[in-house]
Image 1 (cartoon, rainbow, N blue to C red):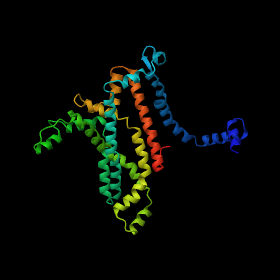
Image 2 (image 1 turned 180 degrees about the vertical axis):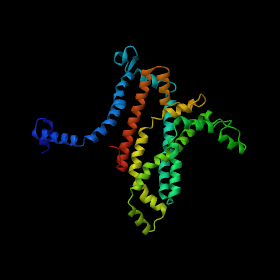
Image 3 (image 1 turned 45 degrees about the vertical axis):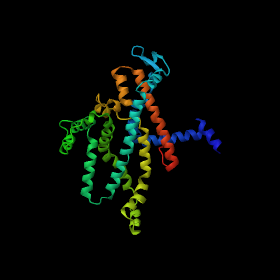
Image 4 (image 1 turned 90 degrees about the horizontal axis):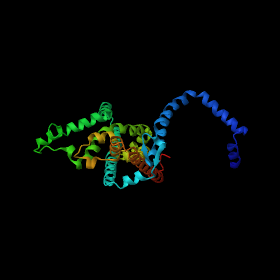
Length: 321
């Protein structure tokens, strides 16, 4: 039976195949507005995500602006080898992974904890006020956010040093301390992203069957027991998906914020792959080398995404695919 279906599917002139195509085309014409809506984001993805992938070929060439992408000479893995043998290679990888892991450990649970806490609040005005206060930082632009951080941590006029001065602690140049860069970056990121990230988990909690809470109340369950046995299992599928997406972007640390926070004093711990690619590719115009570094970064992200998705599927039976 399955062989017969395969033969029909492979034969475009078979009557059943033609009938199926006619039925599909009829559905497309009937719901053409929906397909038109899908066409807009699809065009965006093709234009700005898939078409630029062809430019990655310059990672394997000595790109020359005059000769163009296809006219430039092939050099194979020359630029990859050059990057791997750089004296600062391991320092860049260590900084990239260090900031990413730090952010994942500290920042990933924060929206979950906030959502669980807000879900337990029964006073409507207080709950809305907390939501507004925690959501607001997300809508501050990166440039303004970094400006706030720099001003607040200024050794001369910063509010943090002013408070420390009240306890007899001398002024400290926080942004000039290489060892403090990761903490400042991650904690400011948590402050900015936590409220907005909690929306996903609050939406998942809103879909929990109220009868579960009623049954737990009848059984004499405490609030803590309700969280452990109802809330956390309910948001577990969403949590796994968000974890996979976060790990998949582990090597893709946002360029803008780190670059704006960099200075000559903290660059030993703040130089990551994205900032290095910018400096080498755009400032020094070494396009082939920077493309090779960026491609290496993307491949590592892809490998991490596949591995974490596989492990999540084996352990929790939840995954992206």
